Length: 448
Image (cartoon, rainbow, N blue to C red; front, side):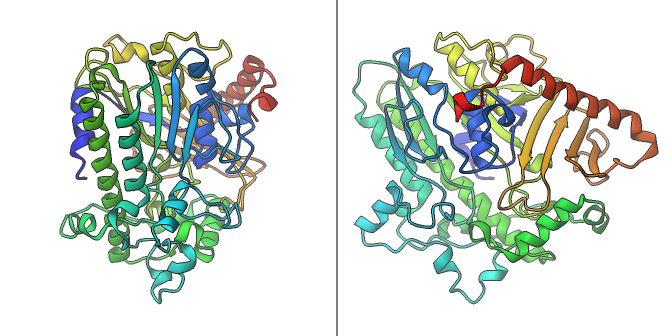
């Protein structure tokens, strides 16, 4: 990866190596991040579930000026959610809104006379079904969604004149598919030796039936301009990964410009920068497209916290945390008392160099939706050594010994030698859900 600006944040800040989301899809993961509760508590279990509130309201009420530029994925899209202002940019490719919703990026393209690259246009290509969602962005660079969001964030920082502290959420749409870097950025990866995780037939055969069904579904429906292939060539897999990595490098460009804008404004030493993502992407690993599974390549996300003088430089946290733990950490730095019902936990202490054990277990949930079509509900519990994925009302599941099988190839669910650890983790899952319900109370309507 060519990410000099993110590398700088790692070297000068704290890098978390075991941060996990609470749901392998956009809106439930983001709702947890910005509320501090698990999806079953918020009631936001899939994209387009009603989500209108967040702890940003607490920042707002405490005197922070709160702004969103880019993707948040609230529903409705325009809900304030605690922000004073929102400059909304959503996914590059949309279907839940019937294709009629125009965000600020769409309007920018229209004002400048450009026809947006999107699924209906990509479908006209003769090689559409072979591309795995990998295309180049052939319009001017400033019209690309990630560049557009980054440029607006820089402008906002340059123009901000309020005499109060601010909270700025910058939501880059990428590297969410379609994978659409500028040709020049793609060229950086043309000759790189990029490793590809092998896809084993034994892995595919031993996957739960709902995952097998999802593979077939994604090969028949072009979600986010991606037509999945059940048996892609190594070249097709490599090309897709090159496009994805080039998208990340484009985001890194804008991260650097945002840092420079803060420095020029005299705010860099007074700002905490947090970089993360709402989920990962299989990129054909384990034979799957995009997200919706519970493999680490989907549930484990980057997390970097940078703040000279506040965060210990060049530090590395290998303890397990949940992405939603970012919320109470931000509130604690802002001097705001966290709600006692929060399921998220602050990790401020490790940022300051103190001992930190993190979470013994992390959890994630996914309900049936327009992509995960063959299962009712799946729930993951993960320790540092073991991972179990439970599928509601099904006789199968997944059990991986992460220390011996970090790439999650050997499913031990039916292994007689591992029944005790399976039962133990099922007990952890049960107790977690019961404890969550008792601890938080019926909060669903509050957050929806």
